[in-house]
Amino acid sequence: MGLFGNYAKPGPGIPKDAPPKRGLALFFDVLSREFFELVKLNLLYLLFCVPVVTIPAATTAMCRVTLTMLRDQNHFLWHDFFSAFRREFKWSTLLGLPLLALILLCDGALRFYGAAALTSPVYGIPLFAGGVLLLLLLCAALYLFPMLALVDLPPRQALKNTLLLALLCLPRNLLALAVIGALGFLLAATLPMSLIYLLLIGCSLTCLIACFCAYGGIRKHVLR
Image: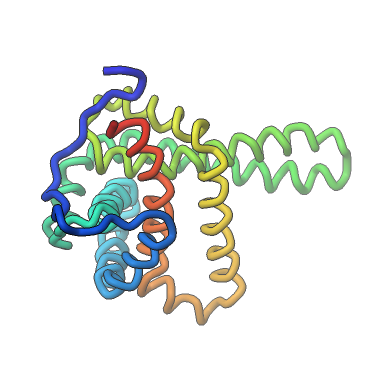
């Protein structure tokens, strides 16, 4: 089985005569070709997030659809989304909610120690440690939901792979987080006008960026 395991979930397959695209060419090809599908996916995701506790499973389902797009496979939006949501609900919730809770906890700690560091430099140590931990947790979040969506692995192995890829692909992960962070900053800076962007494509575009980043590491180390 190796370090990562190898349990690819079957997919429809890629046409033999289709020239494969890679890198940014692949990303922008998917974005332009699937733009309206991403809008529908965004609305579907927001609908499934309404109960709040369903956010991790809805994120896994959204990753399933966007990964199918990135792999240039046929997809059926509602069927693929709902089947992934139902199939991965248990482990997406059990693994995703604690991860999201830790991210929020670290964010709160950074705000606290950031304010405290203004009064005493000694608080700079926990501020730095919290910042590093938050970055690692965010890198892990880039992989957890695509991993659950794409490969058949025991939950412990999937979590192990997530943490390993968060470290092994760190430069790529940090670049993806920087792009997502820049989009988030623009979103916050242009409120309330940006609410239209968030409603139409904000979540699905963020997921596409995250999956574009994560799929490279998963393909190299897990789907070998």
